[in-house]
Length: 537
Image (cartoon, rainbow, N blue to C red; front, side):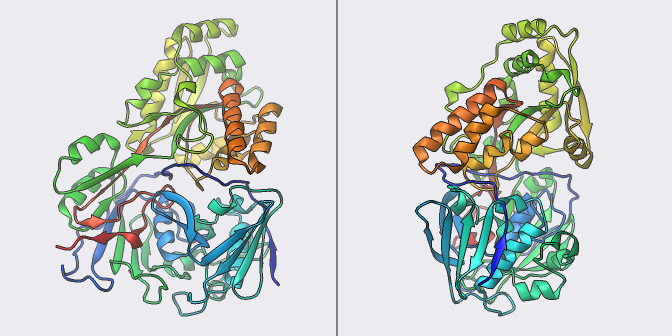
């Protein structure tokens, strides 16, 4: 029997939701045109599917990478214990054919398929699952937090038991994340990989995994040119239905080029088209447009570390909440929803729209006066050149700057490269910051990041025993009705005294060639390229 120890941020149940994912980094246009396969090729994988996207990944190591770009590819190359279909976040079988949740909601026993082989023909067994989870946790990548408080052990060749330290209602919706990819342990080990406790310093498989496949998914990595192109090829040993397209080419392409390419191509998808373009595109017969609510959220953070900023003054913080021009910010992207709390709209426990903070300029001005701070001034920071859903963070910063000027506060804009910005954040030097949060798994527990013991709260040194008590109870509560009530209280507390100010929840868009099918946007891996098909001519 093999056992490994981890640790996880408790999370589960869901009630509706849509997407997630962050789009970052500036792109360099690459690639030109792509030929399509013959029109009659239907029975087996054939032809080429092209996806244009603004790249934001560093590599393709599933246990080290966390980005929109990588997740598109990794979901196609690697299997997970369970999966989701499109934007339906009900867990369905994948490597695991069935599962049983314990009565106390602290463990799940997964029974694995016995007919799955990796791309080199090696059978997939429970040992590969245990190795994969241990490597993810021990390399200490950005998604290693998913396994805190968890341990995994194998029972024979085709069963694994995932156990949590405390009741974990989110467990079933965590294992679908591409970071929990199941890899061929022997191949990874032969190429420098390890799942040992010191893997963070001794594992050397990152470069190999960025150019090669160690998975059992419908595709394998054919080629990866950083910041240019990822090429995937259909896996002939895949245990499931053969994907429609033999090759999938994911190109790093700026948004304007994406718009042009998708209108000219016949088997193309544009990932990063802003919602503002949707009205014009919907009447364009050369494309199809799929638009839906997103799960990424914009919010404001205020540093609480003593001596860093005057913005932490309670009256100034309340003035900021009341002074933001929320309607003006939502107008930046058509279809954007006003975000009432820190849990996205559509999730269990999200705040109703009528509880969103409403602008009150007169009251905000009075709060600034009551603070006793003369000529209040702070730095308002964001990432230079970064946009999501067509909304440039710099534009949001400018709108906020104007809002605060109306209530008597001076906000000096500080635009920095993403690396510098994140360094400042980790050093608790950001006074007021524009935040953008994506979804790691579709459950409200994902948004306990903002609780006083959560990672996001750590960046602003927030301490609040009341919020902590509510979050601690919500994290382990099983009953959905009770969970929902606790999450409402949690967000109400944040909206009253917390350093996080929810702003908006933008929509997301996919634009594709008219004959393509299966254009469904997922909040974690954007699109399942293996499920994209094509109408008959």
